[in-house]
Image 1 (tube, one colour):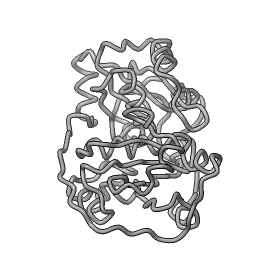
Image 2: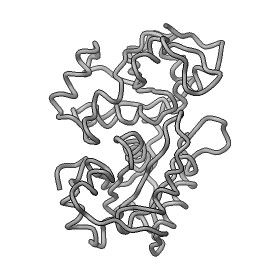
Image 3: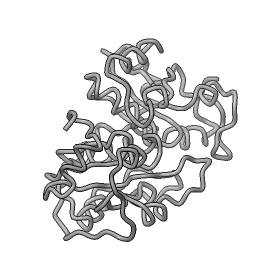
Image 4: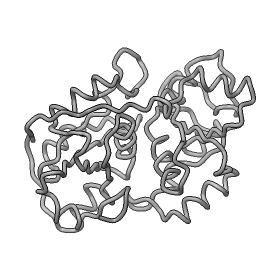
Length: 279
């Protein structure tokens, strides 16, 4: 095993049939994509990998995309997937580390004790020459005991409190620089252009290289270059709460383990004309 965050394709291949290892495909489309990742999972996945749908294991009572589900919704889902809080959950996605960190964050929020991400994702697995399979996957049900940590989740109300009361918290936005600077329209229709007042920009893609995170030294340097004080509190955001988790994981890797994530992100903030923004 590489460390407390990642496993290599070689490690996973050697431990694929361990009783305590559960593999999860958490692929999700970007907002401008119409890719059916569930169908792609059915056609090709790592042997034994189950599909964790971030858009369905979510709060479906809001029109915001893939908001964190209620604890009971998560518990029921992972129980059926045969996952307890003690299993070693290995998460991958079929893209470039776009959605696996969001699933990592979700499992951690609800109390999973051992969560790793497969470096290189499905592509890295295939490039290493390991086999895939197709079709549905089932496991015997398990009991996942929830240990929910809601203090890691930030709401619109909390963001407003930071802004209006000059709370010494830094906002860090994971969107592409052109979106952050309001140079291009948002991919979701109807949203304003801009960013949270005083926010700094660390595009999520700057932390990733070929489906793997860069070194902790490189990641720390990227945050510092953008003017972020790694000794002060941080709230991450993005377009919809997905790639904000890429930043949370990167911050966790470099020792900043208390970063919060604004779950509504720009999908919520950008839709409300009464909320302040900067361009």
